[in-house]
Image (cartoon, rainbow, N blue to C red; front, top):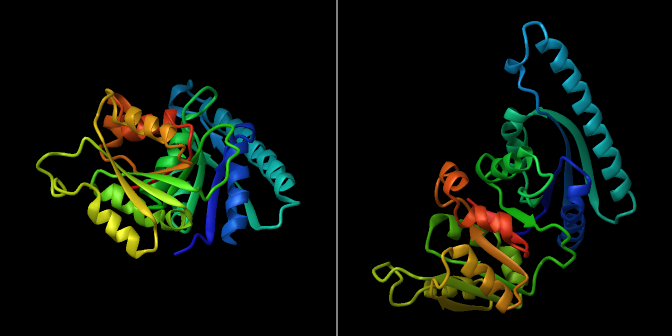
Length: 279
């Protein structure tokens, strides 16, 4: 397996610098084609305007979004013009409620989607929507790139967050090019259940599976010494100087994680290391 088609979605150039730089570097290393979707977002809610105003407001919003898409594409083309990779760009407008359908369809035909952090100052709802569309509608793995990231991907040391879930196994399989390129893969099991199927050998079967793929792997079993699993995982990543995290996304419902939080949500918000997620 190799990543031969990569997709990155840009809704605002300033916030997308790290993801574009990483996408270029990764496309070059994988000899892949990079598709860039330049998205102008129509955020109007037509039902909230007085009678007769909706058509006028909507037309104005669409024109503004079209101009935003054209401006983004012009900036993307300027950024990529001198790069020695295969790439293409597309300018498109989508209403905020329809982003999932638009971006999910394109993600379906990508081996990897490269995304920026969806949460934080100046981040719109469209970033979260595009990320979730890639995972759920597109069924594609997503590489999340933190703001200001300047490191290299593939990474030398990878932490796999392993909890025996279907999502975690799917992430491992879809991240195999990263795992094979790493010097060491750390299968990290946090607070394993005492009566689970792997109770006598946490992470052992996954380690054997990866070894047969030519991946050098070891297992770390950690106690849950902090309130959140994501805090323990991030501390382990820092302590081991890991360059990449691989994990399943949204083991709980998206609604539950949006309201109550969860490992996926917290990693999206707090991780300073690139994260490969799959669902």
